[in-house]
Image (tube, rainbow, N blue to C red):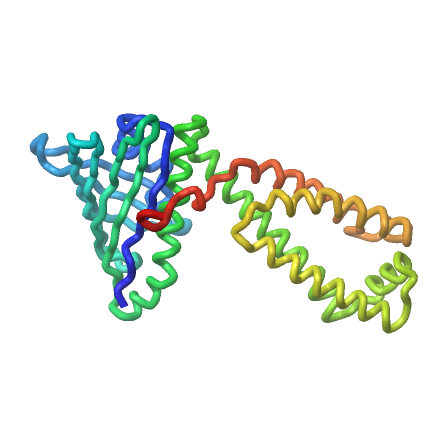
Amino acid sequence: MKQKPIYVEINMNASIDTVWEYTQNPKLHEQWDLRFSEINYIPKEKEESPQTFTYKTNVLPFISVEGWGESKGTHHKQNGSKTSSLHFGTEQKISPIVQGKGYWQYVPKGDQLTFLTQYDYDARYGKVGQAFDVVFRPLIGWATALSFDVLKRWIDTGEPPALQYRRFFLSIFISVLFFFTWFYQGLVPKLIVVHPEEVALFSAISGITGTAAQLAVQGVGVAEILFSFIWLLPINKRPLYMLQIILFPILTISAVVASSATLIGPFNVLTFNLALFVLSIIGFVLHQNVPTAKSCKRKRGE
């Protein structure tokens, strides 16, 4: 089945000349566009000739995709907009894309500018490639939208794309770490093993003993697993960080009051919860003004 073209649109508080420079200058373009690691223009034979270029995308360490491209800009005098058409492709078999075509459009609207793109491509490897494209196309569309937001923030605030991406990926890394921590703590010591220390600690805090305490610990384990999956959702994580900033000191004090012996073991509740408490503060700060693909429209006329 033929997939729909990728469409991304964002509004910017910038002039058309500024956005044109940030998008048509290859050394600026490669900084904000997550899809390209390196772009090199090939000198034109004639001024009116299309601009040809080569590009490189670093996929993994020591693995990259190199390709070619051709672009041509046009100016529409009636509404003052500009369009840059693009034809691109690669011969490398590792790439799921054979070649594609699309355009960038710059549409002035008063003090603002609408910057948009639409492009489509042919998937490699026939029906197998088309099946893989069901996953790859949303991913490349998301990368385009995220890149547009990074560009907008770069122009608006002056913060370089490298710093924005560092903050973005560190935030993802911390979110995945908290997912694993809550999932593991809920699954292994509370559901699979039902560790005696977990039961004893719960009994000391709540006063519930025996089988009821074991069932309650298992219930807490289920709650922790459910909470862990929230960390994987594409939502604003700052409320989650704030919840943990409040929660970890309460859990630590409760555990110490219930049994002071928890302070003398290796990797005990104090050092473990303190590390998670500090990491929650770091995550809360990092997640402020983090780039997001949600700031872009993904359908025409949306």
